[in-house]
Length: 227
Ligand code: DX5
Ligand code: ZN
Image 1 (cartoon, rainbow, N blue to C red):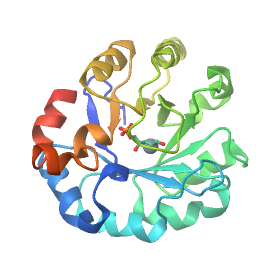
Image 2 (spheres, rainbow, N blue to C red):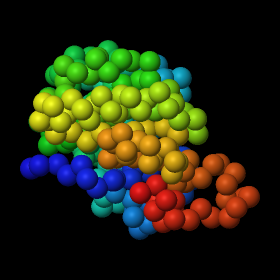
Image 3 (cartoon, protein in one colour):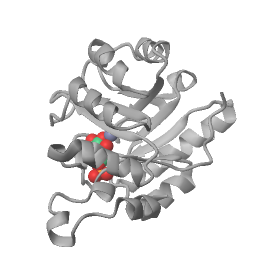
């Protein structure tokens, strides 16, 4: 089936949600028009933070009907992959992690999930080039992975352009997703460069103290602004 890259998809990242009200929060962003739910898995090795694991992803999956998009920021995605596949529509692994990248991508597709590949800001675009015909999604990190709420790195826009150009030249079909520091201005910049899936943590769920200062965030308005 041909993928449609003309529509901009919004994937709120639950990393920025209130975990104590997880079910209500993910149902609310789904009702507000989110296209996918993004789940950031961190192991304390690949990145300097620990987030959540397979049971958490399974719990989120039960709450929503929209696709779940699992981003594995872990050192051994090959070892843990099977535990996440049942809760995923898409699984994205990092090219810098310790695994045979081609084999992991193949296993994701064999499980009828979409296979994503990501690269950190410091990794040159060339590192992912050998795998572009084996993926359904390329995730260009626009911050150093590990934490929400960091500022967008504008130098990453050239990677989005490189990905869109090579996709067109080679007649390939993969989504171009961006993740980190995406607010409305960065969203337009990334879409203009060729991105069609926008991950958004803080700009949808708000900063931790947002509700106290401004009241409940308006998820529908946040999603509309990004789109
Ligand atoms: C960062 C994660 C992101 C993060 C984005 O390591 O991969 O998905 O949640 O958060 P914001 O949108 O706040 O930068
Ligand atoms: Zn992410």
